[in-house]
Image (cartoon, rainbow, N blue to C red; front, side, top):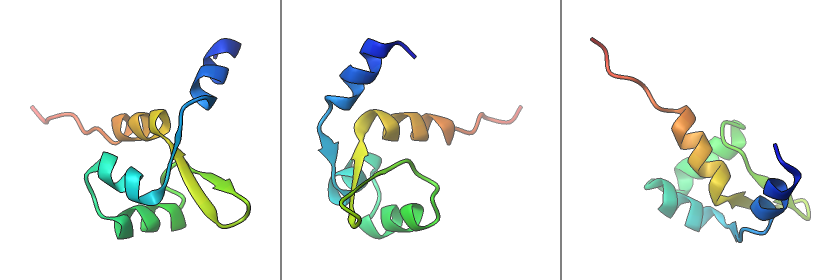
Length: 70
């Protein structure tokens, strides 16, 4: 990864659980379960606050893609 790309990615606003659920099109409860099971990338702030980078969520969704069977 290019150093400038990291800085640009870090400059993105952080999403809370509610905003992440909205972006993913699911419930906050489901997002919290993904956090608990450590199946989704997140940032922990100050011990309890959970935030997400929109780019991380986009990459996670792309990684969940299942190709159609022939």
